[in-house]
Length: 307
Image 1: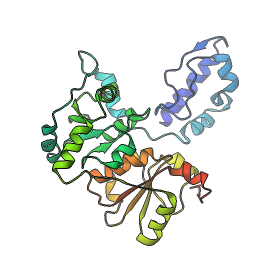
Image 2: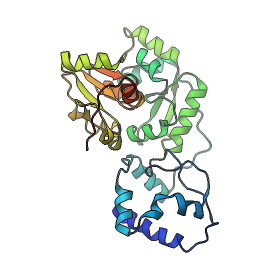
Image 3: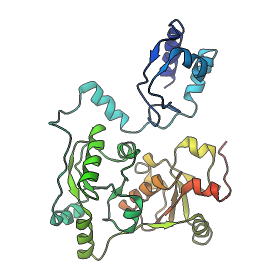
Image 4: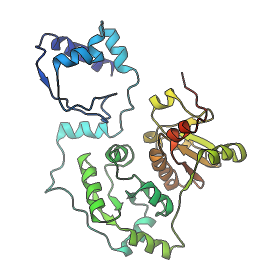
C-alpha cells in the first residue's frame, strides 16, 4: 500500500500543472471500501480541491504517505476476486438475475447438507425465528460489502427473503460483486413450515447494555466488538475483545465456545450479522447488543480509546 501512496503523490504533482477550472468526476463515492473518508460529491473542480482537499496541504511525499496510510479501512476479502475479474473478465450473463421461489419441500435436504442459506430479512425478523445454519445479512446499503466479506464465490447461494421483490434486489446486488450462483429463494412460509416440522425455529437473543454488563459480571460472558480497527481505536467498551466482522470466520477459534458471547458494533447491524455467523458455526449462547456503541454513548456509559 505504501508504494501506491507514493504513486499517488506523483499524480498530485501532475495535477498542480493543470488549470483550476478542470472538472473532476470521482471514480469512487462515499461509503466505498476503496479508501478512507471518501467524499460524496458527484463532481468537483481542481481549484476547489486545491483549496479544500487535505492531500494538497501535504508538503512532502513522506507527509502524504503517512497521512494516506493512517486509518485505512481493512480491505474486503472479495477485493482479490474483483482483481481477478477485472483482469480476466466476468462471466457473461443473459441478463439480471430473476430468482425463482423454491418449493418448501426442497428446504430440509439443503439444511441437512449445510448449503449456504442467506437470510436477507431484517435483523429483528431473523432474531425472532430462522433456519439453523443460515446467515443473516439484511438488505441495506451495506449488503454487498458484508456479503463480499462473508460469502464464498464457488458455492451456490440460497436466499431466504420476504417475497419476490426482496429476493430480486438481493440477487442483483450479489451479481454486482460477482456472486452469480444464486439458486433461488425460500419465502417466510417455507421457513414457518420447516419450523413446524422440526420443533421450531432457531432464535437470537437480543439485549441492552444493562443486561450485557450483568452477563459479563455474573456469567463471565465474552464481550466482542466486531467493528473495524479505526472505530475500535477511537473508543470501545473497557472489557471488550476486538475482531473485525469480516475476519470472524477465519479467526473463529479466537472466540470461546464455553462462555456466552455478547456482540456489539456501531448500531447493532454488523453485530447481528456476526451473531448469525457464530450460530451457524455451532455456538450455543450468542447474544446481540441492540443499539451498539451509539446507544452506549447516548446512555453515558464508559468507553476507552486504544491509543
